[in-house]
Length: 249
Image 1 (cartoon, rainbow, N blue to C red):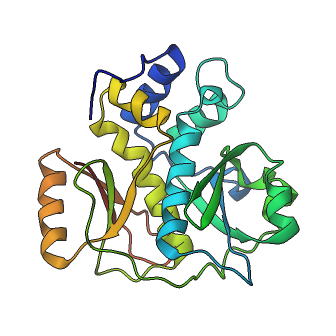
Image 2 (spheres, one colour; image 1 turned 90 degrees about the horizontal axis):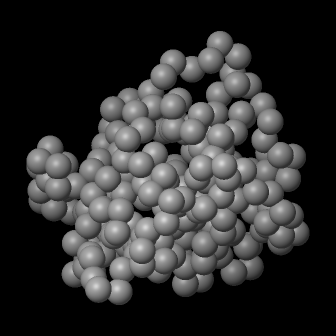
């Protein structure tokens, strides 16, 4: 992925790369459910003009990556403490939907919005579930289904997030999973490659694998050539399920 035009990585990028390549997570949940940490995501789904499914998932994944690689997430940046605490805990994401005035209001809450084709999604700085801004907490978690079949053919080059063909996940659940994969894929990128990826606004493709391709991807994950998302099983699917595998072509 490197080229002579790769931007020089600054201190913030180096710190964000270090966090995404070294975090372990998985600590026990706090005794008070309100203290659980999560990243909220909002998918823009207008009733009269809903987005394409692939565009929406790619926008969600890019929003997560852009937030995690934002200068404000590093060093003395205002978002850094929350990213540090969140990455030390279980990596939870909660996807919601918004339209109209509620989508506009969500833009006022700390986060990053990504636009992909017909779709927009916003990822928010993670924090305590008990402290979620009212402009976000009032948004519905369900009702994220949109039309469109995911493609199976991937581009020849770049970041590809492959969805497990054997799991039945809602669009909201899938958005959270590809968002996690967009964080994990940095483990396959050098600092220089990550700087270029961020400068290009984290382009990526979301695809659904066929059974044969999925088997190959599981092998690539085991060999360290790809990286898999293994779900904790809090919603929709069994614990330990591999939901998405990220690769860099």
